Amino acid sequence: MDHASSCGHDATHGRRRFLAAASALALAPLLASDRSSAAAVREFYLTLRPARVRLAPEPYPVTPAWAYNGTVPGPEIRVRQGERVRVAVENLLAEETTVHWHGVRTPNAMDGVPHLTQAPIAARGGRFVYEFDVPDAGTFWYHPHQRSHEQVGRGLYGAFIVEERDPIAVDRDVTWVLDDWRLTAEARIREDFGDFMDVRHGGRIGNTVTVNGRVPHAFPVRSGERIRLRLINAANARIFGLESPGHRALVVTLDGQPVEPHEPEGGRVVLGPGMRADLALDLAGQPGERFAIHDTFYRRHAYRLIEVAYAKSEPLRPERLGAPVRLPDNPLSEPDLKLAGRRTLTFEGGIMGMMRGGMMGGGMIAGRMGRGLAWSVNGVSESGHAPKPAFVLERGKSYILALANGTAWHHPIHLHGHAFRVISRNGQPTRRREWLDTVLLAPDERAEIAFVADNPGDWMIHCHILEHAAGGMMAVLRVA
Ligand code: C2O
Ligand code: CU
Image (cartoon, rainbow, N blue to C red; front, top):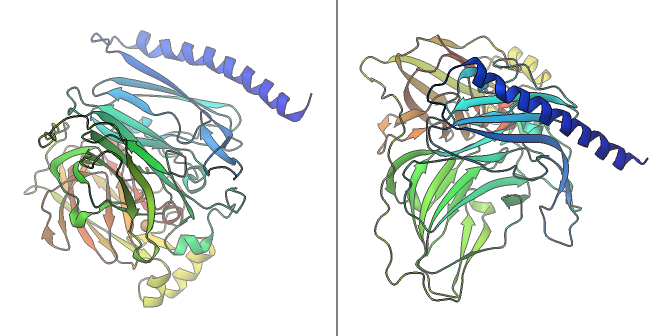
């Protein structure tokens, strides 16, 4: 028996055993608790394994990657607000993993942070069943939280869409998961994960951008259509700034949370790693026209992401639709700013930080760098996943966290288990006081975020540039 068929044989057996185990597990929670409402449980299976995927068009070869269920992105998990979700995960990789449900307010034990909220799912056949209710509608995503700079970087991520009970009327609901890869000329993933140059600078910026796992070419549309376009930035480090002159796009949600529909600031939709935006896109062009969408975030490295290609057929409707309705708010607790406790998190480090001097003690820098750590939160560079909490927050109380970026780099700062309002930037109140779970801080920027600490447990707060997190830019908040 050759190597390939023996692998296939093992996988089939593992799969069968797993299905048997999963169905046994599936019964247990229903028997153990009397959920009298007996809400439907939506079941999903995710198997992690190496897979060959077509990222780049022919004549490039396929790319060996790591994938959920053999595809990049993994399957889109799509449920309805208020449903209960059960996801049975089987890990066929040669290393441990976990699954984190980015932006979904799960109970702490389902948050998927290794050593902090669960034991890692063992390599070569380990299993774990995640089960939780989804309180919020919106656009979320899932990805590993174990060595995520490499696991996400090799293709492990997928969309997690929670539909409103009463969604806005659109002709099509489309998800674009954006990613950025560092590929060789043979379309293989460069193996330099965790490269210390990347860690100290802007993270692992690649050379190949994909939309839903393919280098995009044209996006076919019809004149007169309205599309709800859900954008998810699953890249390790690349920040996207999407511009499309010639289109009317209104932002209707940010990080899954509804906002007053508005045109993107400066005509650009900016998404740091981990962030999402839903757009209501009115395709007002004429049949046969084409418009490009450019990514201009790094001004000197702007490029054309994709072309919007109008079909030659008649417009879908004679007149364009009216303004899209505002989506109903999710059931988030409103923070009480008068009674809120105040805490400060200061982010420091990076190559420019050292050049500025005085940011970190000289001796400390040498010690941290020796351990591959380049970044700190309140003076501490975390390397493990079960650090001591930076703060203990009182359950049910409101807090304002003052975030200060003391570095020359952008950082998308992500808080687990909660959504927060961004109430100020550089001392100025924000216009929309948007709810987010990941806030992008520009170099030297300060932002205040406010939320009710209503989800008990130990929660990560970290930079979502995955090399920065690996390089020490993470902390834990305990809600007790
Ligand atoms: Cu999307 Cu702690 O991560
Ligand atoms: Cu960062």
